[in-house]
Image (spheres, rainbow over the protein chains, first blue to last red):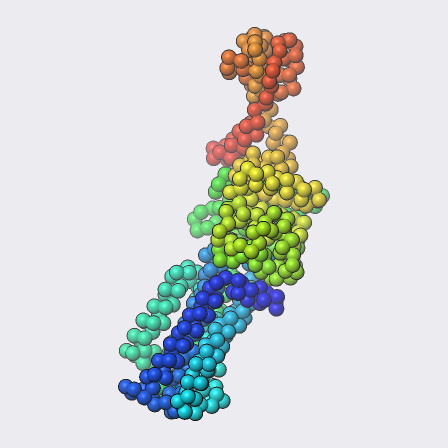
Length: 249
Length: 301
């Protein structure tokens, strides 16, 4: 099983997709931190030094989640699209083992994306805030816990992506569908019916890291974590069933 | 000899389309078998069912007496190269094999060895996206060879190969078979594999139409044509007809004899005493038998 997981990790490492997504995560995280610090205290956003502001800035890595989702989708649909899944199942005909290895590998890879986002966040925000004489403790629940939860949330989004990819199978449809859902449909639902919207995956991920920002409209961290884990299980189990049973033609 | 591969009563339907209808055949250890049939005959579906990729609607397909999915260490026992397109275009050839090796529990150093065996070592560090179809075929074959298996299943391996590549593939399969390996190789062109195989399993419309040794199939071609060239073609024709042969002038200096085998024609020619400067049997007859067997109206029982 360990070598199967290593094979799946090697798959992710040997195409440019993973590194491209790393670059995207780095860019978006830096943008988020810079915007977070520059806009703090302006037009209603919490002032630097407040707990809410710290969450806002140190939760910037939350954008890694969407890239983890894309990574998960690409990991499955790429294999289907290029026919590499044939080779995978020829080498390991016991398909459940392949699926489990893929999910574990995705926790590792998507977790790495989340970790990258956290490292960049700290590298940019910490010295900058120190220069502004804003005291920040990395061990405080508003900083350390937010980042750890952000990494966990990113890993979970990677797993959801694997499930979505296995269910949709078509690469373009899966990615476009997932992005439209996250950026358009879910935002509309969250805005129009917040009582329903807060249970959706994107809002749950924000609940994990930024609960004080929009208190009440998001689930508490523990609730958000449970909801995300539930999405993870639902998508990965449904997707796994399909991967295990379907003909590979 | 034991059956390495056994397909029994295999049926596979995709919706309302019957890809394979009640197909049975067996492959013995140490043979090189051509799995032949026109495009759409159900060859690929049969191979995919055999390799656990496709679930049969009914019937069984086993290797070493058990379903492929139940095999321990399948890569070390049976190597398969199913399609030339099964690679991520952004991945280097060597990485593709390393991944397969890792998943199969084979030392990743073996990846380079397998590439060398198919003459692809110089392209090891190149991304597969830039490969020709022939190079993909070789890479797929390298993947099949990773575990140094005793059985190879190759689906249309000659597709996309240039004449030099086909020549190489023939030589490769011959040496693999000489070392005791068993090969099942599919093709829609009999002549492509006729020099390599000793058995043929011919399917058409998802059904078995022939399972025989190549020699048995060749026997069915007796009654083919023999072409003779002579400076006295007309005299030769008349002399042959006088001896009961069916002969006709094909050219100013050529006579075609039908319905007799080459041995008999040779004897008759010697008997006539007419000098002949060329004698050829028409090799396309094996192909004719193949076409007859697989054309839709003859394929029915």
